[in-house]
Image (cartoon, rainbow, N blue to C red; front, side, top):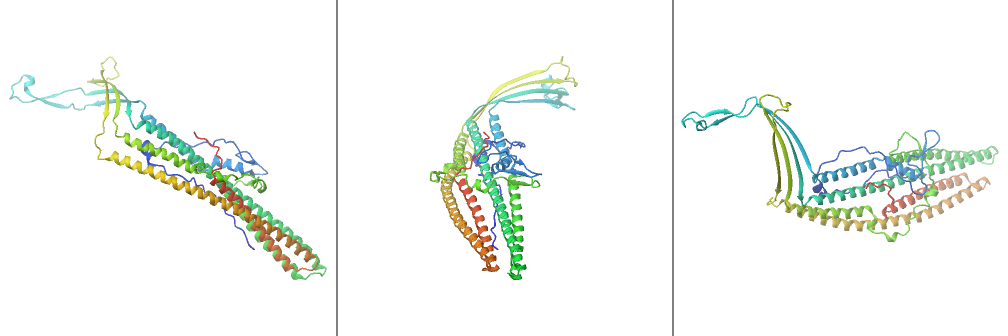
Amino acid sequence: MQRTRFVSLFAFSARPFGRSLALLLLIGASAAAAQTPSPTSRSTGGPTGGQSTGRKLAGDTVGFTLTEAINYGLDNAVSMRQAVLTMQEAKERKREVLARGLPQLNAALGYTHYVSLPTSILPPELAGLPPDAEPLEVQFGVPHNASASAELSQLVFDGAYFLGIKATNMLVDIEAERTKLSEIDLRHNITQAYYTGLIAGLRVRAVERNIDLVDNLVRETAALNEQGFVENIEVDRLRRSRADLDVVLSSAQRDHELALRMLKYTMNYDQRTPIRQLDGLDSLMLVNSVEGTESFTPEDRLEYRLLLRQEETNKINVRYNRNEFLPKLTAFASYEQQAQRESFNFFDFDQPWFEIAIIGANLNIPIFDGFYKRAQVEKAKIQLEGIRLQQEMTAEGLKLEVAQARSNYLGALERLESQRESRDLAERIYEVSRTKYMEGVGSSLELTTAQQDFQTAEDTYIGGLYEVLAARADFIKALGRYPTVMDFR
């Protein structure tokens, strides 16, 4: 007997974009400390509404509508928690760049103990001795020396600093968009997994319904056999068909269990807790209209908008490297106190401490670096041109993706209508064969064949339902119409 196989898409693909080297040049390579995020509450939407934690049912079972399953995944999926950490890292990098332009204050304490004081050689003339006398060996200083100092510095001018700030602001925006992109992917994967579970459950119920029909036939045929109207082989043939359905039912139940496990995996839900799907196929087939597809533009997709933002960061990178040719001016002030003692009595504040105060400025003027900065500028220009080429290629690829997704969806709808007609026809043939058999003008072989054909047609129709739902979900994603409810800005 033919079986339709259902595949669930449960891999979390964030479709990450490679970070441009421009931002790394602007903000450095230090990483912020990772923090464990707490789940963020979200508003519910969609056709069913609901709660992100599911609904407690009988026993340990928890029920989820599609929207509730999506919201639970958004709160708990590993891919979303990783996106939150990446967002936090981007914010810390922004603070890191800002800190370069803020006043820098450092303090230092020092203590030196000369176990043996350094010896200096002096000419004899300094002591009033004849020039041919032996040089004098003298020791200067005291054994115990202490110092306390503070230094304040402030960046006055750096042509690349403010560009770095602008770049990190854009980095935060880009990571926010990437987080939304991760959310869209997760929504899509959970939706597909939810559809797979519903279809697998529908197939189980279809097989159970066929078993009930065959059970009735077996009882009726057995009764006719006892009265001598049919032969034993007729009963045996139906019982064989009934045994085959038991095998089909066991396989369908395993597929349904696996589909639910895949759904829980996609949601990052506890595999030990049983769940039940609360939405039905009838309600889901009526939502998420995909009309108006002729108005699609590449800007409707987050992937393309991210490339536009990356173009802006690469433009900044070109300017940043050019500004590296400009001088850098830094002002500083330093204050220090020193103490020199014959013994360690620095906590005797009646003894003197000697002050040193300095103010100044440093001007760093780049003159020649072996054409290093020039190479950096040219490399940034090449990266900028590469991003523009990638935008062009991505725009055409997205248009093709939409056209293909639309074709797949319309084709699935057409096939579903044909499969529905085939199933209805197979059901009518089965009913006619059953009636003929009960009236004694048909054979059990004809009836069994009709029943198997009906089972096959129903399996094919159920598979067609999944194809329509999955193709529509792919079409909605290709159009960029999956909503996002997370805002990290």
